Length: 428
Length: 145
Image (cartoon, rainbow over all chains, first blue to last red; front, side, top):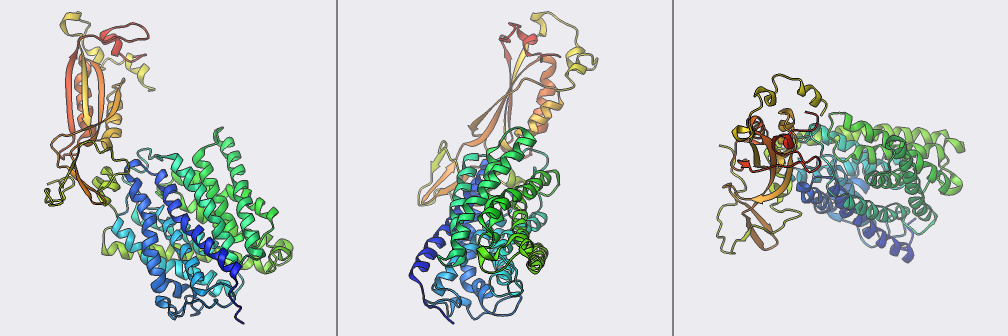
């Protein structure tokens, strides 16, 4: 049965798509505040690169591999180049197929941008562009097919409302692999590498939360109950994570930190992402508070290792997404979601497939990303040299500075008075 | 800073090598100014710490020291950046500390490429520690040393 296009649903989904798109530049702001001044633009540009590369890859093949029928592992190519994606509603929804595709594209974009957090301040921009395009196809589209596009997890009943599998665990565990393959920054573990603008981080986190209302609220693809529930839960859960994070900060250091608070907003939004449309508002609040614990633990633990997973994508996204996915298995409630009960409400089968998703997704994301980056690394260098890292990625990779004073800058005429673009001479 | 107390009794400390002399002779205080790459500033601080040089001021400056200029483009505007970011260290030390300070600065700041910076040493007419009114080498001797 193919339902007709519904005006109200379409209107909301148009707005929701724009809200989710905003999350990518918001993430760029969040990330660039967390790095050093000399890498501000490069870090932001990695998010913008996702807007470019992931969108194109999505339209070419990514959407088809994720949402065409295909097999249980990956979709077919019937929608490659957006063939057959038009105004008629996609099966099972009341919005135009074309809009569905665009909404899903914004998810792919922000997920690619998330992974960049693991490799900022040292990965070469060109290598990142290649990696981003391939990753959106080989990792994101595959995981999206499993959880959303009729793949084997979805068929077996894994509940993932808005992307705990593909977006959160997918980015988090890929980030860990990326950090291992690309390697640590030059000064990691030797010098304190501190955030250069905490205000960017806070504004970025706020804009991400704002965009997340479209992300979760739009994942019901309608203005129906599930979307409303997810929308409200997106308000409640991160608020509880913030409160819990404040408490953890107070216990650990006697001070509530601003960057900790920004992190808590992300963790709360991530945790409620898979569960948004499946758990009651009360349980959403419990999930928000609970999700703070494992993510906080990973954030405290990670800097004591040699792994330079720079912006803690694993802790904020991988860990919190995993928490949310497992939480559904216990506390999903048919009286709220109309789909399935969790273990606490009498159905242990739900928990089983949540656990399967929580085991298989990290394994695939980590393994596929590791191999993909090894492949890209075989074709081109992944890392900037120590000297380039010292100068800063902004000047070296983009020929710009985030905070140029203009002092000492001499105009070069359009006739190209300076013939060679030499930055700093290479050592002889 | 834990080894400051030890150093007071250390016969090999550069400060204790020379017996006290008259002011006119060589209780002179020098100002060591170094211009270094910003990315080497932390290495310099570490080297100075190891050399037991205390009492440091740093500031961010811009300058030009013969290195090739970076070319940057902002939309249609292409510019040659003739001034590079540098960090300036200012360290007032008594005579026996001048050499260790210079060595630490070179060790910490050198990359071997053009643009590593300069060190300038000038004699100081007078130094006063504001809190106590101590002057000259007493004023640049770290508290507890």
